[in-house]
Image (cartoon, rainbow, N blue to C red; front, side, top):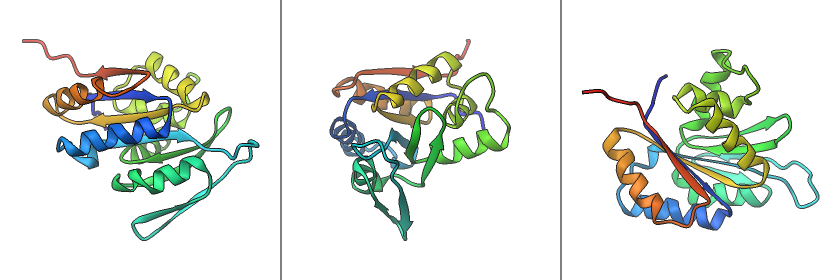
Length: 175
């Protein structure tokens, strides 16, 4: 898999990430192109979990509730226990990218399973390390992938949301 057109935004709270998802949906962005990732723990640091029941996510913990709500619009979900980060809840195509990265033995050079998934779609390793650090500090990652036009549209929408940061990762086309 070599998807090289994406925009990755970091949000401080699930409410801000949820607002961005609603803005993207309202603008007609294909929900199948969105992924979200966040760390989830109980306040005392105990790991939590979730399970799928039909098309709805049943959950425990604060981020699980978020994934079961707005992110129920996203396709696919998973819980990954990552050393040094704890449980990471993921919804959207990022789940498949993580699995593909793991199956392709892409976990090298200090990146996690999440990092392997992001590297597999063309996100540079130095950016991946920043995104992993954002998750460690309880931030939320929102990833949109697609055609250059779709990414330009998503970037315009994300730029007008209350994000901590965002970056576009796109294949360079030379004329």
